[in-house]
Length: 57
Image (cartoon, rainbow, N blue to C red; front, side, top):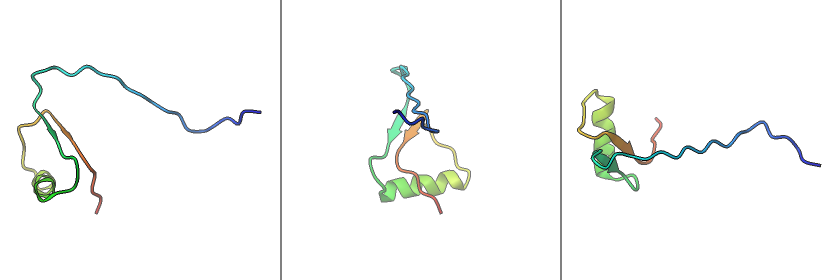
């Protein structure tokens, strides 16, 4: 018997434009922390997409 789950897996596949400015933080570093603090203080940045760890206070 297969038990029905209340969770769904969603997978999105997108093609990114080659000219996007993407910043990837592989782990939590000083540079990453500085970026987070600046964003939370309302500063803007030049990236179209930012990827990396999430920090919750």
